[in-house]
Length: 68
Image 1 (tube, one colour):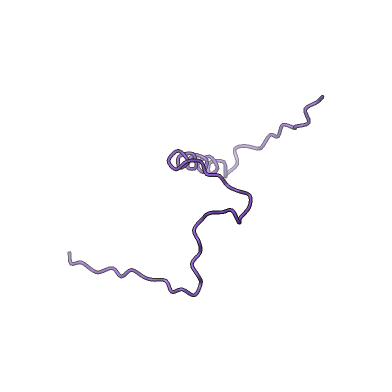
Image 2 (cartoon, one colour):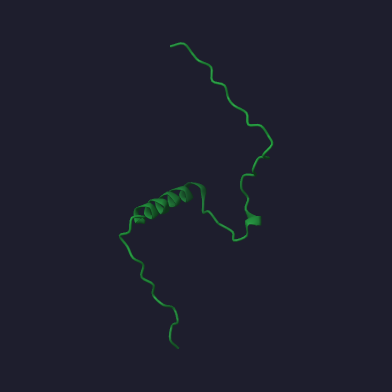
């Protein structure tokens, strides 16, 4: 029986190749620290930060000036 999978060859040397390599490196570094990031296919399964309600005012931190 013949293998039905086809070998796909992608073009290389394109402008975004460096960005893709950098991103993969950054992901590998973070996964080494925090563990593997498993992405589910269902958005309802995401366990991320909940968005704040739109009508809630944002608080600002006031910085005090210190004399030099």
